[in-house]
Length: 543
Image (tube, rainbow, N blue to C red):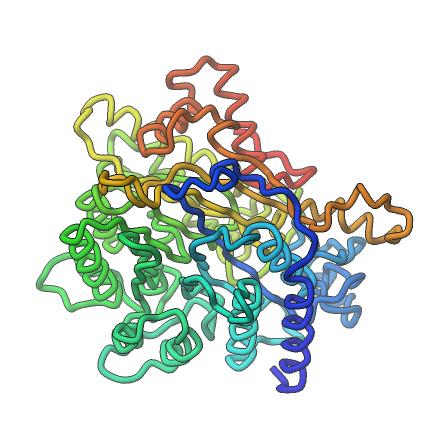
């Protein structure tokens, strides 16, 4: 990126964040925090910001919302020529985030979510740079680095405390679009890795000094964010099968050590140390651990690790997929394997692999386009037919695991993986705040246990329309001061009595019709799927 452009973006963004950081506050929406109960804490999960300095309000979507040039050429690529870029973003289009959206996101974090220093730490799971979706403005390594540096300044600016920046721990993670070329991160254990060197320097405020050299080797680190709670930021790019610069994890001890083995051996040491010290561990990554995302051996090894440390791993948080969902990483339920008991699930998984969305580019088709017969590498995440297939996969996953637990009540089920939807408006922008047990007096075993979360979203269509008619025509009491609002809390919406693995699995089973009548199951799926696409109007995903 041109240094002048980068500097201008930096000044515009940071000055705007800081000037609004103490804006008028809304009442806090979390009763746990309102009670000032010191036993509980809160932390923010933010993912997939995809900052785009070239985003232009009013530009045709066909140009990736970058301007009006070459529209005729763009029409051949993407037929959504009548739609134009909105002020705060363009949900469902595949366009990335305007800086105004990121600024409003940080204002909400500073003015509402962290009002009165209510957040204990931040989990930030990557993909801060824009997609490489515009052939006229090709991404460069320098631009990716500049956008990630800008994202750091945004986050630091959102957490001022007495004039100081970085008042709480921020745990970052490398996304597949935070590297150049996207997805491809080489493994160079014996020589310096330029990409990891860059992030080791950029994230110096976040990575413990005694872990810097190890981070430069495999891109992972761990931080004790509050007493007895550790966040392990794992480099999923060395586990993801989207990274063709590395091999699958070794199938046996006779095979050479792969990049993923290095990450998983490090993670095993972190988990073992936490067990010995009586600490809870949260795992944070960009690409979620599924058979359609991870290399086969890496997935198997990772899942077994989660089973071995069910007493230590208190939660997992990922991004990348842009959709709101959960699942359980365990080899015991043969997720995606074409075995006798999971033939249907295995077939769905194979179809998903064949038509996996191209997460390194924006959507290349309108919302109504059916799944192409040979669309590998070009399917957008907002295509309903792919979403429908993925939802079927999830329902089969819940069904199989529920049946296996019924057959073997002693089967250990790991904590669910929570995949948060993105800030970038693939659907609607979103943020998530988790509540957890911070202290229980002498009951050390419960420290770190998740007790709930609040999902926030911004109804971009609504705010884009209001911006078009002008602020003077909008009544004061209609605009609360922020574009974000509460979307849901899973306990009350889904009827969860607890927030543990067993309750989440029961909920998955109820959506599949296990332990619930047909109408109840259908209603639960409807609620779940509406949240899965972050309430994007006009998009139905029937299952």
